Image (cartoon, rainbow, N blue to C red):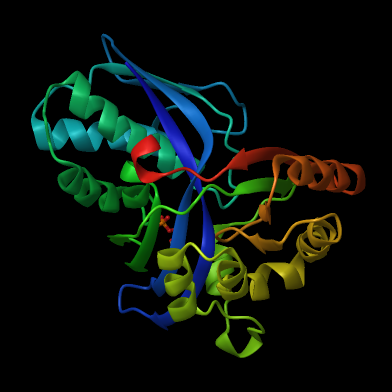
Length: 285
Ligand code: C5P
């Protein structure tokens, strides 16, 4: 059983309040991208989770392991599977790679064990694993609120090319949220015009409405994030932004050729992992 686990970028990330449970109240525009891990699930004598990257944990430290245990507990099936993850999505990057793998396990076991649970039920389980996991069940273009788990599907965007560049630094999501202060934010996403832009498939209005308030935390500490953003625009991107809590920066470009030029420019100047990819429609993921 093979599942593809697609990553995401945040076209918008706004923090609108603090919650009693310690999390932040968010408004996010999430977009699935055609950049994926492969998650293979096979019957086995006992539960085993492995990856092909040394910096991504095998076993209980991997969210995919917890995903198997959760499906097993709720379905009454024994967790006797081997999960082999082939990583392509950059790790700890703001692209929901770990969340995508966990979501792929929920979808895959739903098939392997013939449970026929609807996507809504899988999304509820996904929320127990992490804030970004519910989105990764179905992907597409989605308005996510609450701590990120309340999803409102939006019409699919026309295809956009995007360049992703991840500097070789580690940014902890918890650290980024902990150090957030509304007072230091210089650019907020403009949610209402942004949602109108999605409905109308208006690229210029989409670029204008995008924003990520967590840049105010990460760009202060990691100067290369702002520098990569600037370089992408200089090299031809129509808009660049950090995804999630970073450190990946993405640049939207209006053609594959421009994407190749932007990718070459950032690779030349910075120590980054890069990929040129596309947005993904909901029914493609
Ligand atoms: O839900 P998840 O485990 O992905 O969140 C990782 C960390 O990010 C949380 O422990 C919390 O510190 C922070 N976070 C937050 N508000 C959110 C989502 C995440 O403060 N809405």
